[in-house]
Amino acid sequence: MESNEQTGQKKSARLRRQTAIAKILDDLDPTGRRKRNWGVEAACLDESPDTFYVDGSSGKDEKLQKAKDICRTCPVAKICLAFAFENDTHDYYVMGGMIGSERKAMLGRYIAGFDETVAAPPAEAEIIQTDSDQAVA
Image (cartoon, rainbow, N blue to C red; front, side):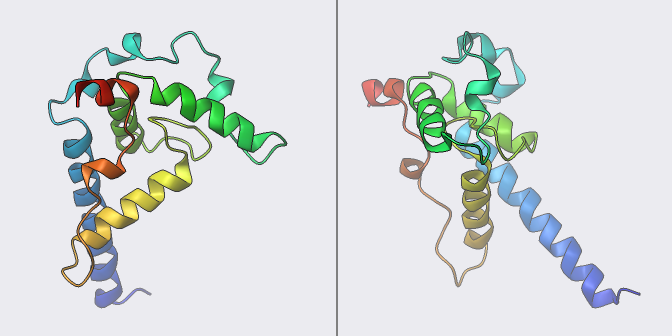
């Protein structure tokens, strides 16, 4: 049976995760655009979904690079990444220029940022920069 302390720790961990995801969503998509039909603007609209599914099969590195290259040209990459966080997208899908392990690492850095003994959450510069972002900057 779980002790009150263990239950409290689990609740605290869940709350920290939820808070970190809320912060990520706010950083990536402060206007809440992901709630609207943003997908029609996506660079991957005419690509096969298989292009973005990168598992342990042969050719993984090339496939991952191709998917990330497409994301780099996408005007809605940050919104796509926010969508991936909000919907806990499958680990093997590249969304917003990140695969599941990269999204988990980013989430971990945000969670760690809530602890004053650890560095703050990643800066905007760490989040994928698309060609359209660079053109505006």
